[in-house]
Image (cartoon, rainbow, N blue to C red; front, side):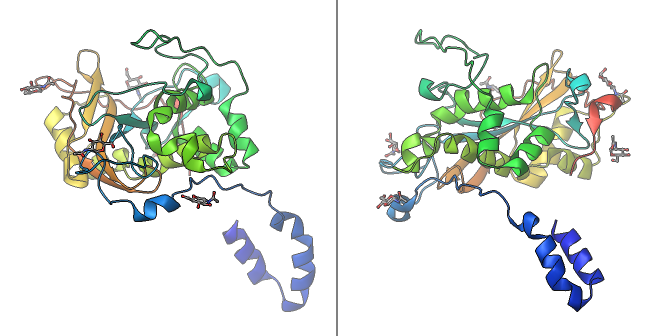
Length: 312
Ligand SMILES: *[C@@H]1O[C@H](CO)[C@@H](O)[C@H](O)[C@H]1NC(C)=O
Ligand SMILES: *[C@@H]1O[C@H](CO)[C@@H](O)[C@H](O)[C@H]1NC(C)=O
Ligand SMILES: *[C@@H]1O[C@H](CO)[C@@H](O)[C@H](O)[C@H]1NC(C)=O
Ligand SMILES: *[C@@H]1O[C@H](CO)[C@@H](O)[C@H](O)[C@H]1NC(C)=O
Ligand SMILES: *[C@@H]1O[C@H](CO)[C@@H](O)[C@H](O)[C@H]1NC(C)=O
């Protein structure tokens, strides 16, 4: 919008400026965007430490993800969505977002930790290891939560880069929130203080996922090392790992299907200094061995042309 504004301005004479300003007033009256940040004032004096590296007890878990201090930013490589007729397409020249997961420091993890924030229409698993049933959510889509906060910018970005396969995008976003963010202490409702606005934690999580995703332009990092999608040639696991390690300083997890021969996923591991929302992410080696073949070539397939679109 700024570009258009400047362009129009330069075309105007000074005398027409006042009139123009009046005719633009509807544009300037944007709907309010409520803030969605947690209240971290108490963290200002908390000991500063990377998650999973604290040498004293972390008493305020709004300040550092605890116990889920091994934080994974996860992405998918897909060649189709299955919902192309409905306009659900993949972004050109980009991997897509899976989520932001709070593993415990030992690599184990919790899921669906707060059933009062269960927005996932098809919980997976629907029964937790301790026998707790996770009820399917039947209320309004999380998309309506984003709209209620007037975050159309966020919704547009999510529909472009956080793309589901075989089902609609909002059900995937809801799944990621309810399964993972409810187990991430820095998104606890209590962290937003007494003025908590319903669903602000959901918006805050979605913004945080995108912030973390933007740190890892996997497509560009691989392409910069000469590794581009191809239906003609394969790559070795070490080629893929070396390309990413040379840019991020650690070896992420690479996930492959079809007996380790088709590249499908990447997981970047971290300890986080400060909150998961705004803190510093220290990239670490994966704690999980790759599921990709170490002996066979790995396919990094080209996307189906009718499944992709250009996005900003
Ligand atoms: C934030 O929390 C502090 C205590 O940690 C409290 O004094 C302050 O009033 C809170 N601010 C808001 C806006 O809730
Ligand atoms: C780090 O903090 C967690 C959460 O408070 C605590 O359980 C753990 O014992 C702490 N680690 C050390 C070494 O104090
Ligand atoms: C990962 O692979 C290494 C080397 O092949 C092996 O020693 C180690 O046990 C594997 N770790 C797991 C968790 O499977
Ligand atoms: C490349 O191969 C994959 C897997 O068979 C297929 O889904 C995709 O459509 C192909 N892409 C192109 C451009 O042919
Ligand atoms: C995707 O980007 C490539 C350049 O990398 C371009 O050749 C192609 O036309 C783009 N596809 C779409 C659907 O925009």
